[in-house]
Length: 127
Image 1 (cartoon, rainbow, N blue to C red):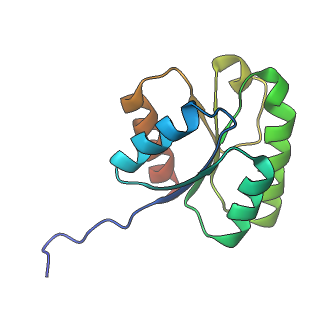
Image 2: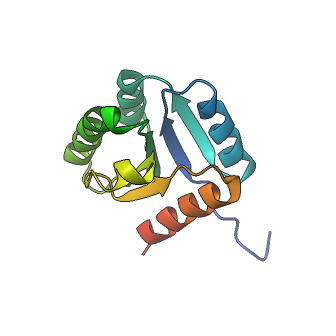
């Protein structure tokens, strides 16, 4: 029996319409110890959300034109499960234009910073 209890793996749903970026982020998260399900499709993302419990839902918001769709998805998730933690992965301009998600993860591409941001969000949800 281990002396230090293992930390349970955190489940993340990653919804990102960028075909090249999504698998890269997924792999970074997996290598950092997270269990990741992901999709390119908002509709499939909602279906996945309702079929499994997630510790965090990451919604990629690619530019200002995608804010309304991301906010609609966030609202649907939060209406159905108010305790669900939702974070938008976006640039600084989008971050100041929305208030739906619990958290904002900036997209400046630094893998360590990305994982650190995810860990910080998840640690806030445990308090």
